[in-house]
Each structure stands twice: as structure tokens, then as C-alpha cells.
Length: 146
Image (cartoon, rainbow, N blue to C red; front, side, top):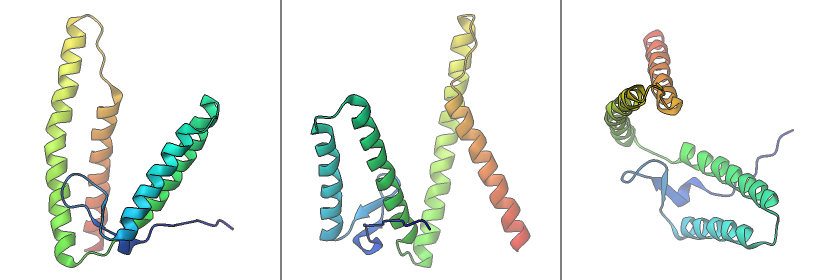
């Protein structure tokens, strides 16, 4: 049996509309939660631990925070209008990022080729391929459901 300890509550946070992805603080409890997790992160860095122990403790804390906030982001309440607005905003963000990634890949390829050693950072390529896969799977599922 797996026990998941979730501390943050969705009602403490709202959907982040401006300035990126995630959630924003909505209540004083959310502000206290955010301050607490940051203070714990700072405290871990100040503990007299070896570098490797500090890395492991920090990584474990960040994994916990990611899981805790992912649960909150998943459960934040939105009405139909907010779902539609978020979908359009996400689409526009993807369309803005794609040409930047493609141009960056071509600049890397051209400049490294001119030096005689063609190289492209695989991370933007993987990001574009993952986007194509996500779009294809989504379209496939939506067409089958309708």
C-alpha cells in the first residue's frame, strides 16, 4: 500500500493566468505554505551535511514539492470559460515556442557545420518530437471519441 502525503490544498491556490504555468497563491494559507517550503529548502542548504547528502535531501524535498504541487494544479477548480481560455493560451504558447526551437536548431546545425563538426543539442529536438507525439495522440483520441 502506497501512502501519499499531500499537504497543499487546491483551495489555497488559483490557476496562474499570467507569467507562466502552475498556480498562484490565493489565500494566506497558500502564502504560508510557499514560505514554509522555501524556508525548509534554505534550512537544508544551511545544515552541516556533506555535499552528496545535501544533494539527496534537496532532491527528495523537490520531488515531494513537485508531487504536492502537481496534485494541487490538477485539482484547482476551473469553470468552462477558464478551460477554454487555458486551452487557447496553451495553444498560442506552443505556437510561439515552436518556431523559436526550430530556428535555434537550424542555427546550431549551421554554425557547427561551418566549423566542420555538425552538432545539434538533442533537448530542443526531443521537445519538438514530444510535442508532435502529444498532438498526434490527442487528435487520434479526440477523433475516436467523437
